[in-house]
Image (cartoon, rainbow, N blue to C red; front, side, top):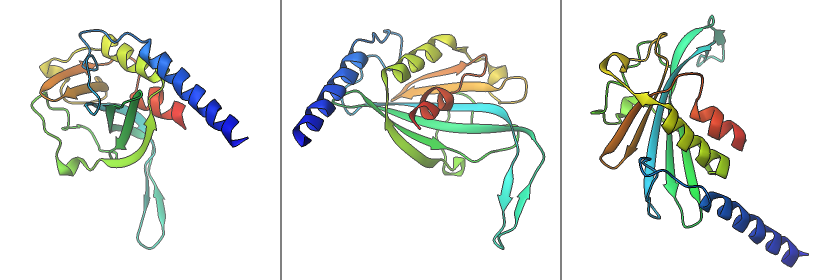
Length: 183
């Protein structure tokens, strides 16, 4: 029985790998030509309607009113020997304006307070979603750098010294495309 399960697991792994290998990554994507061990970092900031809850040291829970907040997330996509792995980080909610996205000259700072959430393997659909969102976005201008209620979804893709800063029209977030599907 254990041998059958091991063979089945090997078959599933090989099948998933063949699906990812069959996806053609465009040459203009920062995912193109990644070597094993290389990574691409995706920073996404988007504005969403949310209700904030605070827990005090005494155990009291305070709930605010619904309003728009900016949420920042980081996805580190690593090329593995077999497929891709993703480390997902999120940052606490911050009130407008979000100064994290001030342009391509940024460096991640400790006060951004990214917290590790989880790690998962990237599916073939996840890889397609990363390629699609990179194609869908358009280059940001100086007016787009601050996330506010009018311009509410940006993505910075970083691979070593190569950057892309994109404005994503619509409600496309990597969290919905990658993380929610892996729960």
